[in-house]
Image 1 (cartoon, one colour):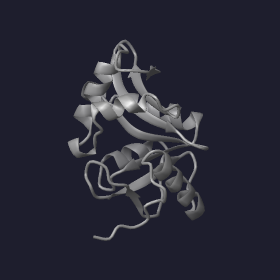
Image 2 (image 1 turned 180 degrees about the horizontal axis):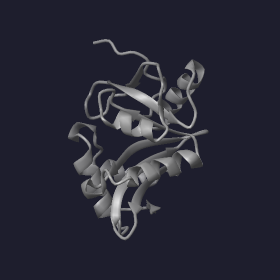
Image 3 (image 1 turned 45 degrees about the vertical axis):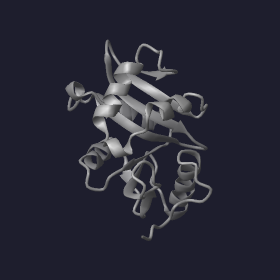
Image 4 (image 1 turned 135 degrees about the vertical axis):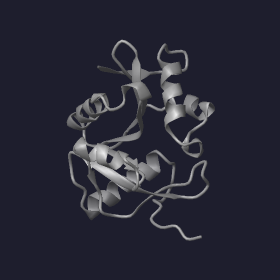
Length: 174
């Protein structure tokens, strides 16, 4: 299994990667095709195809100061529950400290725990995007465990570099 960087919409793997992305995440949490095209120009962002003979999955990754932030990870439905996703996540977290966001009630929490990720015990808000309001998520990390200082540092880095905020979002009041 290989991780291949997709550099543009003209790359051979882009169509399959984009289809997996669109079918795996809620519409109000997805970026548009135009937004994706702009990200190809960012040196710290990678769209990856997970591939053997065919594209089996996708991952979007931000290379930040001292860790990688996996923004999206999904396996094509026909490759789920075969151990391929776990293999990829273990490979990533062994190569570099890795963080990701997960809805607290999602079955994905248990999957990532089986891959060695730990849930940070601090409140985390994903800044508003297409949803227009912040979303309460869990920040998970591997192989390290985040203390409060480490959590604040990585949250600030993610909010600045991924979501473009000047200041981190630490609470939301309606």
